[in-house]
Amino acid sequence: MVKVIGITGTIGSGKYVVTDYLKQKFNCFYVKISDVLRNEMEKKRGKLDRKTLQDSGDEMRRKYGNHILAKVSIDYLPRNKQLIVIDGIRNPDEIDYLKKTFGNDFVLIATDSQPEQRFERSKQRGRSDDPKTWEEFLEIDARDQGTGQPEYGQQTRKCMSKADFTIMNDGSLEQFQANIAETVQKIFG
Image (cartoon, rainbow, N blue to C red; front, side, top):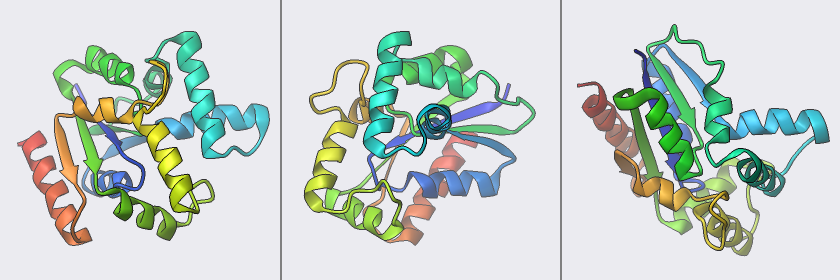
């Protein structure tokens, strides 16, 4: 069976660096849960911001179960790759679903770093849905991590507590990349 790596982590903590590394090193299929959601929602409503995506994801989990975004993301994945990378896991039931589906072939990696660093990174990457002020960042980050959220909502901090590996991104990019390489070596032996 193919190996499946799930990626979770706080906003601006370097998830894209991990997925970039995996895409460069392996013949892999990559899916980002929020892209699946975004594609479906944009068909219905047009361009979406982060809050609308979060609200839509919460609504889908409430209606169909907390695992629904993981299920939709993997239902039609090709199995002819060395590795499947599922990025942007935000609810613990998504992890449980993936573990049930893939068993020991599923591994969860979390990324994290200090809030100030994450805010600076999100400003530098310049995505249209990234927060523009420190206050906006704190509000979006708190929701993403699960503060005040229902069981079907964003629960990134709970997801991170279920990770098989956590990679801190508090130093240089080179150090982070070295930590990623070390983690991948542990996963694949």
